[in-house]
Amino acid sequence: MARNRYFEDEKLESFNPHHIRRLLKYLKPYKFKVLIAVVLMAVAAFSNLMGPYLTKVAIDKYIGTGDLQGLLWISLVYITLLVINAVCVRYRVILMSKTGHKVIKNIRKEIFEHIQNLSFNYFDSKPAGKIIVRVMNNVNSLQGILENGLINIITDLFKFVAILIIMFSLHFRLTMIALTVMPLLVLVVFLMKKRIRIGWRKVQKKNSNLNAYIHESITGMEITQAFVREDRNSNIAEDLLEDSRESWMHAVMLSHSVFPMVIVINTISVILMYLVGMNYLTQGIITIGTLIALLQYVWRLWQPIINLSNFYNQLLIAGSAAERIFDVLDTDADIVDAPQAIPLPPVKGEVEFKDVNFSYEEDIRILKDLNFKVQPGETIAFVGATGAGKSTIINLLTRFYDIDTGSILIDGIDIQSVTIKSLREQIGIMMQDTFIFSGPIMDNIKYGNLDASDEEAIEAAKTVYAHDFITELEDGYQTEVNERGSRLSVGQRQLISFARTILSNPGILILDEATSSIDTQTEILVQKATEAVLEGRTSFVIAHRLSTIRNADRIMVIDNGEIIETGSHDQLMDSQGAYYELYKAQYSRVI
Image 1 (cartoon, one colour):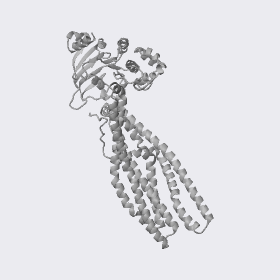
Image 2: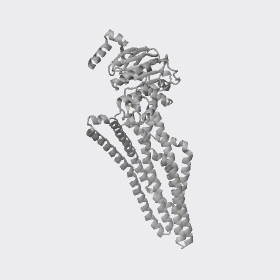
Image 3: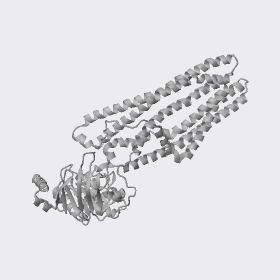
Image 4: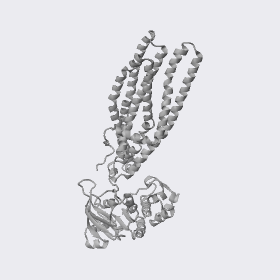
């Protein structure tokens, strides 16, 4: 599968309004709180809209007649409405902020859980940084529309209709004059919407590229410094930062260009109302209070339209983020349980590959008609050149990938007919590229068996001779290690990983270059320990150091996806075939 690299923009489908509708479904569990928020905003909007009308009454009825008592009472009503508006807005903001953050948490949790179930092919094709962007940045982009967007659009539509009704009731002709510029506003928004959407999609792509490169650079910092690549990497980062900045500025300029256009159009309508209104005033057609109220309402009429235009911008930003989020959620895992999959019974250890063919990419076969059978308790070693297919066999046995044709059986049961969880729970894997998580050493050892006691974890560490160096650390088993175990040596990390694998007590054990980074003295001790661990347990060992597999029950030499030799160490040495040549070449180098 082709890999999308950090400098390549990801390809997504065109904006789909269905994404927004699908996004709003996450608010469904909180519909009662949303309803309360809508009521609060309706009350706030009503109290706010009464201001210009009260001004009209005050001017025409009380100020003109000098009725100070009436003016005082209407002023108190005005102040009360302002207080009601402030209280409603405050509690609406608090309510929807809490609701919005809960929805954001739920979406992020759903994405993370889905990503954990995706197949290795997905991670093979995307940089980790771009995946992180979707879980974090893209979800954050939805916060505005989830917290305020829906409520605001309902409120602003209510305001717009209410203001129109009030204005028409005050004076029909002046209201129609104010609306003559409406077609111009609709044209502006229509012309700008596509450019704004494209602008924000580009921002998402460039930010994704930047995050992917930063993640890759931090992960490979040791290599960067070792090869003095800091200046070159800084130049690449600067280019990506500039791309991100330019795309952001372009999108912001497009989005914010709508607002001044609306203001200009609004100002034109106000000027028209002034010109006609002053004429009506001199003719006695309207009162001064009515004209002032209408002018206040026309400014408020355009405010919901401005808000709606801003909401449209927000909608486009959220839509661009939603595309990426749903792109992840809609990605199906390649490796899934069969419809009638059953839990794998406790493993006895018989493993059989029957006519297995496999390819990572179409038409490039890695394994070719592979056949072998392993009896319970046997230790099988795979040797061969890099890329021969040794690790691929292990990946297929654990269903990290699925075979193209053939079958893999454990105790006579096809592994594709059992649940993935039950399969992997009974297979322990010790990889060459060990991964230590941030946290206490004890938690790292227990990672594959959370039910294990501290005593059992310590016993596992003793088995692989990790106990001594762990107890010498400042806090022993509770010593905090950094991500990837950077405080520990490579050998120490492998010993902890080895203890973690053994503690899981698997029915089948896989050691993939498990002792490659351990010094010779420690390796001798670990070999003694593993002999006891492997006894009675089916085990597969991949090793380039041939001296470590001399005691394996059978050694299989893999070449170009096929088994070309099989037998014990002594048998293969006597036959003087491919294994003999490998051993001889390696032994000569050691000498």
